[in-house]
Amino acid sequence: VLGDDEERAVVSRLLDGWHFDAAAVPGIDVAWGHLQATSTSPWRFGVVLLDAAVAGVSDFARRLQGLPSPPGVVWLTPEHGPIAPDMPGMREQITRPIKASALFDAIMQAVVSATAPADTLKAPEWKQAPQVLVAEDHEINQMVVRDLLTSMGCQVEVVADGEAALQAVQA
Image (cartoon, rainbow, N blue to C red):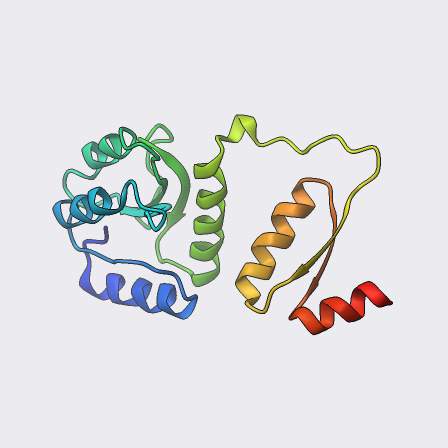
C-alpha cells in the first residue's frame, strides 16, 4: 500500500524485475480485497509493504494480524525519522528514499519472519554440519536458500542447474 503514484510505480518495477508476484495498490480498501481473496490460497501474499503516511494504515496493519496466516509487514517511513517500534505486525522498516537493496533485504527478512516468529528461529544443533547441494537457476532464490541453510548451520554449495549438480556430486 503506497500512497504516492510515482513511488508505487518505482516499487512495482523493482518487484517485477525480481520476478515477485505482487500487487502495488494506492489504498487499504483495494489491498484488503487482494488479501482476503488470497488468504487461504497457496499463492497468498507473504509480505505487505505499508506506507506509514497513508491514512488508516495502522488500523489496516492490526487487521492483517487477524488473518489465518498473517503476512510479514514492511513499513515505509518518512525520510526524517523512524516510526514507533510498536507498529502493528512490523517485521522490517525502510526509511525513505527507498533503495532497491534495502527493499529487497527487508522483503526477504519479512518472508522469513512471517513463516516463523523471530523467537522460534533457532539453528538446529548438529553434531556435524550437513552438506547441502542446491541446484537453482534463479539468482534471488539461490541467495535466499543459501542464507536460510547457512543460518541453520549447513555447509551450502549452490549450482545453476541439474547438470552442474551431477558434476558437483561426482567430483
